[in-house]
Length: 133
Image 1 (tube, one colour):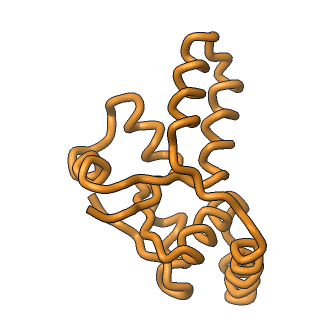
Image 2: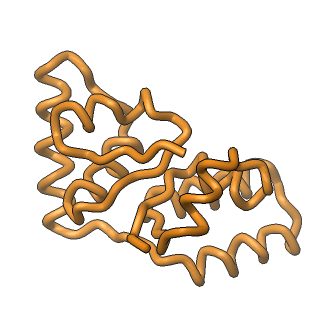
């Protein structure tokens, strides 16, 4: 059993019971973490969708128990480096995806995502490890 990081799309589908079987097996077989970005994206999604108190409460409990990777100076420095390199290659990536990649790369943790194309540039150039289900 290893430690892996779940992208926001994986968490959303996992919590809804709609995660593809291969991905669900990886979640079940590993210690999972999320990044601070994923926590924020999940909460924003709940508020935007105007979830009721009970549903927001369930998400809040799940987030309280989740192992969350925060950003510190090392992650921020890594984010700046990978964002700059991507920009210089003409491959700027979305802000949130870049933060998620920086958290994973800095800690040497693989990322499980359903949106591989959002992260493949970081895998090819910066050492991000992407998992396949």
